[in-house]
Structures are given as structure tokens and as C-alpha cells.
Amino acid sequence: MTTADPRSERVFIIEDDPGVSEVVKLLLSREGYFVESAASVKEGLRRLAFGDFDLVVTDLKLPDGTGLDAVRLIHEKDRALPIIMMTSYSSLESAIAALRAGAVDYIIKPFDNDELLHSVERALKERRMSRENAALRRTLRNAYASRPILGDSPGMQKALERMRKAAQSDANVLIAGEYGTGKELLAHALHARGARADGPFVPVKCGALTPAVLEAELFGRAGGADAREGLIREAHGGTLYLDEVSELSAALQAKLLRVLQDKVARYLGEGHAYAADVRFVAATHWDLEAAVAKGAFRQDLYYSLRVISLALPPLRERGGDVLLLARHFAEHYSRKLGKRVRGFDAEFTSFLERHSWPGNVRELEHFIESAVIFAEGDVLTGRDLAEVAPALPMMRAAPAAQGDAPPLAIEEYIREVVERFQDTRSEAELARMLGIGRKALWTRRRQWGLKRMRRSAS
Image (cartoon, rainbow, N blue to C red; front, side):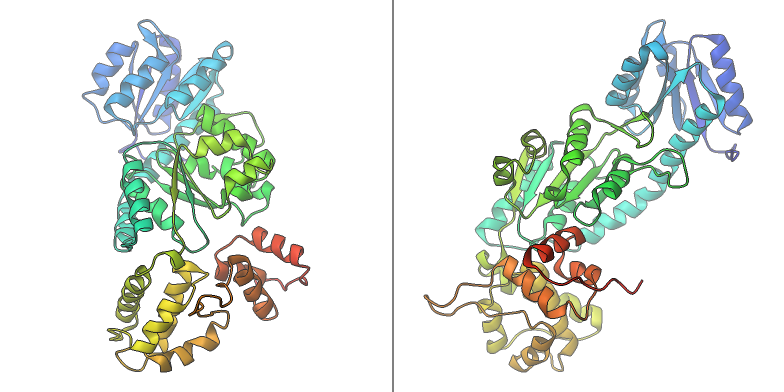
């Protein structure tokens, strides 16, 4: 085992058995940790108040209380301080309760020395990473703050107001909206405005992985060459964003529901549990309530995720927001590309207003980016439309008069893109272009009877 740096990690032990306390102190001291101890909850709290410690290891049974009391009282003062619980085999149920209360791990007595050291090392590593990533997360929040969620339309104003109210709580949130409406951007804003803003924001694309791989990614795997911590544990103290949650398999839905209910998750490959102090924000473009009615999605999981619901309207229903967003993207990409585009002529403006934007804000953003790239003047004109159109052949203008053909539907839009580019783009490239998971793309291709696509060059 790698020896810890003796100048930094400080571990505090709360254990009333002198023999156990000395063994733990000796083990940790040999690894280079600075160790102090106390024999009761009261003494431990008093000494913790005057010391800067990185980890607490506490016994479950103490003379003036329990380890559960210690977890609760310590976290009232310092929510970020990790705590490992020591317990006997007969108290395993209490150990799980400790995880629910906020402990990061538990050790069963009589413990194996290597197991104890591994648990301590892992907890301290996560503590170090948490501190090191704090600045990075602040940078990320600032980056998303620089990407404001723009919209003056009633539907967007309602969504933003509900998001601001939802950020004041820690309840799980379900965001509904078509592809490209900005669900992940809204989830980031929700996280950044809440009490978990200093914790991690961990996104998961549920439709991009097979059920087996997704399960390992979410829960982690113990032991072996493919051991990993898991995204649920990575999101501890923060937010786990489940994009396209409707793609979860029935088995994964059941396992995820257990995590939401118990606040505890388990590694694959062994029964070892760990705390899951996570806020879940899920997103979908499907009508999950209809999926529940058809038996395609668990009702109990649906209601556990949808404590608060947010809905993002499609761009075609946002009226003047199209020009507002287009001007914002033109300014952004002009600055990024070193150009001086400052507006649109009447023909370009007319196209922006008449097009149905089936790909929503994502489609509009990439369209403006392409137009700025090809622009030769400081105003985007009808001539620039002719340059951009070949690169985006799936785009269509919305009908100008009542009685014309209806706007292009989302599914028709996806199929048109697939049919046009399936000979020149890989499945992974097409999925990224459309903003959907490879599994979702594969399912549609099979339904439509389209030929097998080529693999990525990699």
C-alpha cells in the first residue's frame, strides 16, 4: 500500500475499547497519517471542534451514544467531513443505517488490516479529490453562468421560475422536453443555484450504453482489473443527472429505485454498500406518464424521480425567442471565430422566423455557427443561407400559410438525417449529431428496417 504523506492527512478515532483504538492508531500511524483519538461521543466532538481533521473513524457502540449520533452531530458542524463506521457482524443493519445517515463507509469487526487501510485510503483520496475539484467546479459553474438560459416567452419564463424555486429544495427533479431544448443546461443551472453547488455534477447518458455497462458505470465494481468507483459514488454530495432516463432497463429501474429509497448503493461483484447522498435530476423527451400507463416504466420510480417536474417548450412554440437566441449565438461565435457579425438582413431574419426548428435550440445554435463560419460580411444575408443549406439539407422552413404541410416532426427529422448520412457517418457520429444515445438510434433504425451502419473508424 502507498504510504500517505505524513504532513497532511489527519485521522480522528472515536473508540472506547483501548485495545482496538491502539491497533487502529498504530496501523494508520505506520502509513504516515497523523492520528488522535477519543473514547466517547462527547469527548470526540469537543476535540474535533479544535482540530482540522480529514477523516473520522468511529465505533458504532459508544458509552454515551452511538456512532449514528456521532455522524449526525459531526455533520451538523461539517457536512463534508468523511466518516467511517466500525461495527460488528451482528450490527450490520446499523451500519447500513449509518450510511443512510451520511457515513461514507463501514468496517466489520474483527476487521482485516488491509481492508481498514484500503477504506481509509479511499475516503481520504475522495476528500483530496473533492478539495482539488472545488476550483474546477467553480470554473464550470462560471462557464455555465456565461451560457445564460435565454427566453422571454411565457413557456420559458415559467420553466425558469419553477427551476429557481426547485433549487431551494433538495428534492429529485424530472425535466421533460424534446431533443435540443436545453434540458442539461437547465439541470446545470438547477445544481448551481442549490445547496449542493459545491458538490459534483455528474451527467449520465442512459441511452448511450448497454444495460450491463451502464449498471457497472452507475454502481461501480469491486475487485479485479475492471474495478471502478461508480458514478453514484462520484456524485456523492452533489447531483446525478440521468439523461434520457426512459432508456433504463427494467432491472436497472428496480436497482435505482432502491438507491432513491435507501440512500445506499452497492458495488457489483460483492455485497459491500456505500452511502449515496445524491440529488437525482432526470430528463426525458418521452411522455413518461404514458410509458407508466403502458407498463414500460416503473410507476414507483417515476414518482420518486418526479417530486418536482419541469418542462421545456420546443423552440417552435417560443416565438420571439428564436431571434433572441440567434443574436446571442451570432455574437458568441463571432467572438470565438474572430469575426464581426452584428445582425441579419430581412431574408435571413424571415428564414429564422419561418423555420420550424425540429432540432430546437441545438439545431439553431449549430446553424448560426455554420452561418458565421461562412459569412463574408458583418451581416448574415440570404446569400449566407445558400452557403449553409448544403451542410444542413434536413432543414425546412415552416409553412407560411394555414393549410400547408405541417412542420417536420422530431421522428421524421431523425429518420431523414439517418437516411441521408448513414453511408458517410458512423453510428456514433450520427448519435452525437442528433443528440441521442446510440441505443436509441439503433432501436429506431431497427424499427424502420434500415441497413446496418458502419462502425466508427476507431
